[in-house]
Length: 262
Image (cartoon, rainbow, N blue to C red):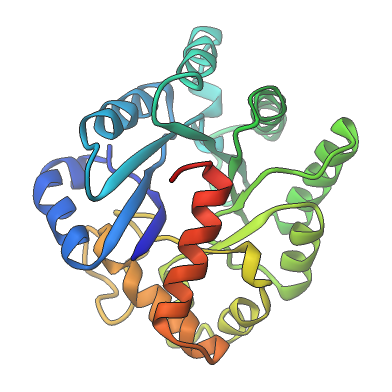
């Protein structure tokens, strides 16, 4: 059985056909899915999905504000995030992080938004789902600051990881898990597959980032769905020289332990 640790089930492309997409997930042996929030409103939708879909696939929710939307989030939105973090089926915070690819949000606002999530993480014990795009070194600096500020290992995930092996190693030393999405399957992603091969067994996760990043052999088709996590798992199994069942077992166990779910 597989655990898709990052899917945007509240996205319109998924919502249009959610029931069928969840059936496809069951048929692909995707037993658990984390529905990831990016705004207060999408976080609320994710909770509603998770609280409705209580059987296979088991859906859980994360709540948070994506860095590209941080400038749009009001204090009232953040109050909602704090309140939602206490609700049934909520097992993580985010997606938050840092992004220098887009110019949607100024850097200081992104950093302050990330810090709020770390504050709430250390208050609640919930792991933080981290987005990092075109700012690898800056993200590491902020992660090290957060670890030093609380004098504790960090509890969270580097989601859809595409960085260097040295970056993955530093993240792991800080306490984080490393998750791989469809990009690890792409034909020119040899370097990324090499990184996936060296992640310690107890820190490895898989995801789809649905409806984005559709893996091979379906690259380019939208929407990506949780059923496709099996292709990422197959690719990582090949890179690590182990069986698909081994990857399914260890990544599911890691996710269940991280999110404190059965």
